[in-house]
Amino acid sequence: MFERFSHGYYLGELYVQPSGSDGAAAIKRADHEHVNEQLYGDEEGITRLDNPLVMKVGTTHFPVVGDEDVPSGTLALPEDAVPEDLEFRLPGRSEVFLANAERARDLIRFTGWEGDTGDPAEYA
Image (cartoon, rainbow, N blue to C red; front, side):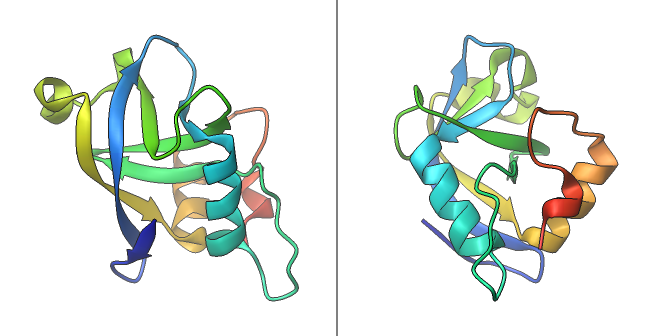
């Protein structure tokens, strides 16, 4: 789904669509858990599968949670949070940058994420 792009990011392509919810950006829960396990796990195999992922779409970073109602391979963005540079291109396929564990931890702390899960200290 994602390939290493740089020191701080992986690159992938997802179908990105606005969602009607006011909640967080979301991907399919199973996809979310798989990415958490593969990219944010430690050498001991201990991973919190509910940590928010951090994805950059267009010019904006989003904490991304798992949601059973989102189709696989899709990133659902709250309508009011869709970056201006993407407004007229959605819904559609788009490049998505996924922050690695270290970068995600920094971005979560910087943005002050206060979701129900994903304490930044839990990142590897």
